[in-house]
Amino acid sequence: MTGNKKVREKLTVIKVGGKIVEEEATLCKLLDDFAAIDGYKVLVHGGGRSATKLAAQLGIESKMVNGRRITDAETLKVVTMVYGGLVNKNIVAGLQARGVNALGLTGADMNVIRSVKRPVKEVDYGFVGDVKQVDGAFLGELIHKGVVPVMAPLTHDGNGNMLNTNADTIAGETAKALAEQFDVTLVYCFEKKGVLRDENDDDSVIPQITPDEFRQYVADGVIQGGMIPKLENSFEAINAGVSEVVITLASAINATGGTRIKK
Ligand SMILES: Nc1ncnc2c1ncn2[C@@H]1O[C@H](COP(=O)(O)OP(=O)(O)O)[C@@H](O)[C@H]1O
Ligand SMILES: CC(=O)N[C@@H](CCC(=O)OP(=O)(O)O)C(=O)O
Image 1: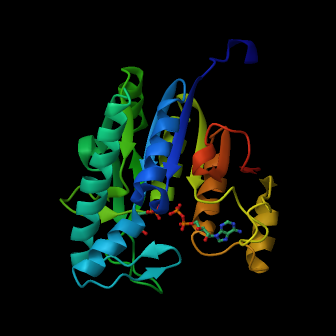
Image 2 (image 1 turned 90 degrees about the vertical axis):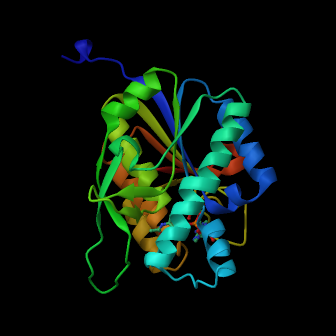
């Protein structure tokens, strides 16, 4: 019955990380490029570096384990202010100035992303949320009305608690939820040209990567740190109905380079 299969409309989910959003020049360029993307789109932002800076100014030490922030009660206040406030609203205002009808959302707003506090195993991450449910139907309604959701890396547990959730995970889970309705391309953009064979050589981009190659690169120490959760989220998304996942340079989101994720 492939002849009757409904053709899904295209949608682009862009995730932008902390190094790009904390600098005005790189953020402006990203927002210009994002505004120029045709069709339906969603922007997911991080802001880890800005949170670390504000925490330091307040005398709060930042601790990361496996690319995730250990989030105690004081740190949760900082990340809620930084991600749900400063970073999200600056991006929304910047997009409005570019004629994009952006709506800033944390997971608590309209119950868009529900999570549960990560159980304590070897590491106690504190107030970090593992995503349970993304309301793709509601996001789809907004998107069809011409709204462009701008998602902060914050979720809630339904009992009144905000939880800190990695922005790469928010992007992957949002892309997966929207893939039920749309033909989704997920683009992780950051300050390098893609996944590199040699982190110090910007021209060593790995053009495509499979799960087996990923495991080998991790074993060899080629892929490490924040790139590991980014790739794990990428494989999960491509295996859950997202059509295309690309990891690329923030100033080249409309170009064809970067690293493509293979099943
Ligand atoms: N093989 C690799 N290629 C590119 N970046 C890598 C690689 N291995 C580790 N990294 C690191 O991963 C980082 C990106 O992850 P992260 O800091 O979480 O970014 P973001 O804040 O954009 O999500 C890069 O800044 C780089 O230092
Ligand atoms: C639980 C957890 O680690 N949350 C992340 C959320 C922000 C984020 O992911 O920002 P980047 O995309 O800029 O790294 C953190 O607080 O750093």
